[in-house]
Structure formats: C-alpha cells, structure tokens
Image (cartoon, rainbow, N blue to C red; front, side, top):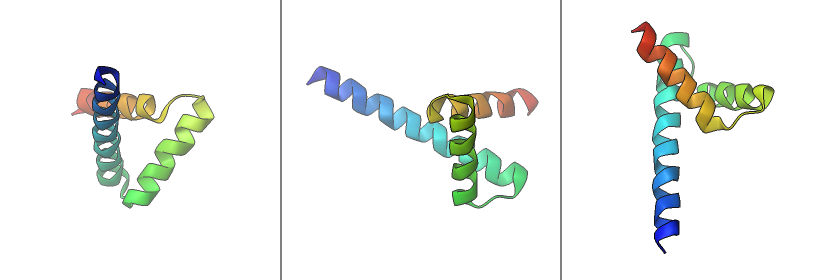
Amino acid sequence: MARELEEARGELENRKLIDRAKGILMKSRGLSEGEAYALLRKTAMNQNRRLAEVAEATVAMADMLA
C-alpha cells in the first residue's frame, strides 16, 4: 500500500510538471494546450526519453532564462 501511495504521488508530480511545461510552451510559442502537449510528446519520442523528463528540462530552461 505504501508503494502504491508513493507511485500515485510520483504520477501527480509528473502531471504537475507536464502541465507547467505545457503552460510555458503555450505562452512562449503561442500554442494551444493540445499543440503544446503534442510537442512535448513528439520531443520525448524523438529523444527516446520519458515525457516527464522532457517536461522537467523545459521547465528548467524556462526558469534559467527568466
């Protein structure tokens, strides 16, 4: 049960990170929410990385440039 709780927390954190990255892309590139999500997914697939990793990198770059 503790493991399931930890997994659920991890998924929630990933979702928050992905939503934040989508917001950054929407604002900086003028994309819709769907377009921003598609860009994150495409980038993750092209780089053979998890979506959450790409979202984390996007947020980190935005924080560094702000």
